[in-house]
Amino acid sequence: MPFQLVVITPERTLPNEAATATALLSRGLERLHVRKPGATAAEVAAYLQALPPPARRCCMLHSCHEVAKQTAVRGIHYREADRPTAGVIKAPPGLEVSTSFHALPDLGVCRGELDYVFLSPIYSSISKPGHGGEGAAATFPDADALASALVGSRYPVLALGGVTPDRFSELAELGFAGAALLGSIWAADDPLAAWDAARRAAERLP
Image 1: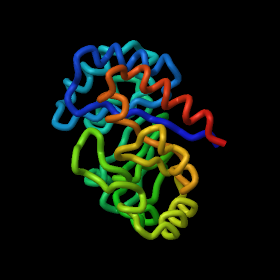
Image 2 (image 1 turned 30 degrees about the vertical axis):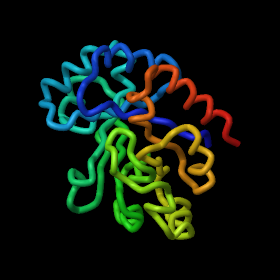
Image 3 (image 1 turned 120 degrees about the horizontal axis):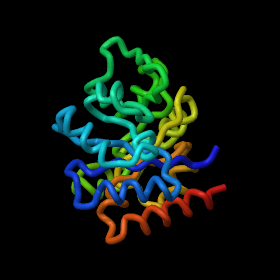
């Protein structure tokens, strides 16, 4: 299976973000995670309306899931704090579902109709300085336990937190199915060039 890449939006909307997001989606990005903490449903809807319809259909909403009932999107993402207390996630008709984990044991606890999950933090965060370890070994020192959890996961696990293209090979060897990119794209001088480099690096993996 190809190494999967998704891009998460910055918390605060950047100048020309809609145009950049649209361009990313025209250059091979298949899933854009719209993460805007504190945004109202109207604000999330307005963000989506700034994108052309084909781009909206690639968006995964991290909040205000009700917007997905009025606007055609790819799916919804559950933050750890928002997952159903029973631990069973039911996918709305026609939508993909993803969620986030921060501890290995949790990978085996959650049940439901999930298309993929995030595990974080893996490396020191680019968008949140001081957050996360210096590497996968720092955050999850038991390499065997990490590899076992990834192999045994019911769902594809994507690495999140400080991920850059030069680390894709390590992540793939550990058993990650892909990576979620945030700071390495939006903090770059040229986000589109950064995305192109990431896509090429993923395509070169065996």
